[in-house]
Amino acid sequence: MDTKILNFKERCLENGSIYNINRKYIIHSFTDSIRIYIKRKNWFSDSFSGNISKLIMNIALPASIFVSVLKYLTLKSLLSLTGALVYTFLSVIIGYIFAYILVKILNVPVGRKGTFINTVVNANTIFIGLPLNIALFGNESLPYFLVYYVTNTVSTWAFGAILIGNDTNDKDKQGATFNWKKLFPPPLLGFIVALIFLFLSIPIPTFVNSTLGYLGGIVTPLSLIYIGIVLHNAGLKSIKFDRDTIFALIGRFIFSPIVMLILIKFSSDILGLKGLSSIEIKTFIVQSAAPALAVLPILVNEAKGDVEYATNVVTTSTLLFVIVIPIITTLLGRI
Image 1: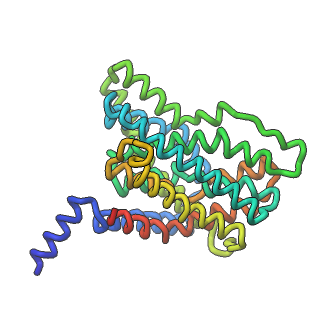
Image 2: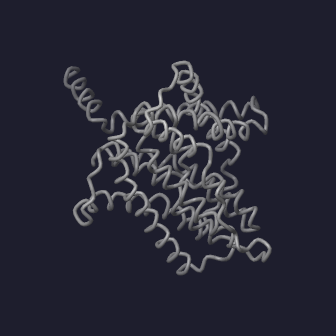
Image 3: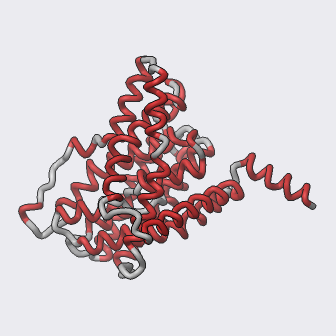
């Protein structure tokens, strides 16, 4: 009997199935619990999460992306990834259409519309999507994560932020314009610079590559610390499940991953698109179900919108993701 169980586990590990995925998720959840405990003990100052955010976004993540692109991508594999952008951009376009229709049907009030649409369409790919993807599928999944990240970044700053900026009764805040600086955040710039090095075959000195590798190695642990602090600060008392919140969460956790799955399953036949590998499929579906953008309350506050609603959506989606991700990963094991 022991031999049969062992063989079953080995087959699960070889196939990257439910056993392997859920094992990694348990480890991920356990480390989050430790960080929540540390925050509860007040070992971190109030500014610590903000400092971590800046360190990850401006230094660690660009370094990690730069090193990983040069390590896991070749010109041939890069060209093959461009076809995957069709899937991600199509899912985003469908998401905007669906969210806009829901806003009209539900008569979502001014100040909430931009938040609602962004919750359905755009995901928190950096602080939750990235560490989770690496924990579940390893560093070899990073190139596919970058495909979704690029799509999500363009969607957020080229369109989503503008929707929030115009979703206000404050005439001075209306007419939000395209912001090139936000369209090219440091992580995306790290990706672009890496592509230049890749296309031109520029060699990287060993000591530079090692230094950037060490910096990039802190992304996942720091992201987990950040998530733990956010979850602790949010607490359970602030959660409200009103109509607009519920439908936004349905769009985020149910509609978005289903759309991605349908596109992956049928686009190759209907549109003649190239099929995706198993790790690409899993990465795209997990990222499509990630929680709402952490920056939503900041953007809404700048636009003088409903900050309480934006904060509530981010909090509830982040907390509920703890329940959603085991379901998603379990279903992925059957695909």
